[in-house]
Length: 197
Image: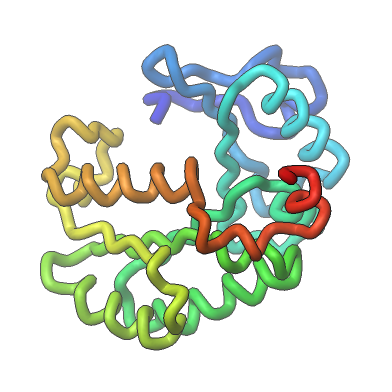
């Protein structure tokens, strides 16, 4: 995204790097902690609090990190977007990831957005059907992102070069993040529901 190496979580948390790198002057980017040197929970949460105070939107990619810091961040996030690929193990991988979300916060399951990305032109429709069946009636929050040659190259993301279907899928994901909808309101934590009334 930034086109060059960016400061890591540990550098920012310790003060060694003053601020994140900027991509296209609008997106601040921080690199994650390497597997051999994980970030401590306190450092990550302090950095997230700092980033949230300075930026209107913070995205954190925890991947398959099961460390305490990643779990703590998952418990404190406002929205979860689970990204999976249209592969043979997509259904099982999604189930495992959703169980991890459930462990962190069972009230959040109804608002999870599942983005199904395709690495092959004919791959995602079959996997999307399997996922909808496996996830049940609440799978309306499943958003298939069709194969797009503009994204398959691994070059920096430029949505202006993406196909209309790809842009529409990303807009749908953004819409579900910004406005979860009335049907998911009962999944909110009880204290949030009371505060809203």
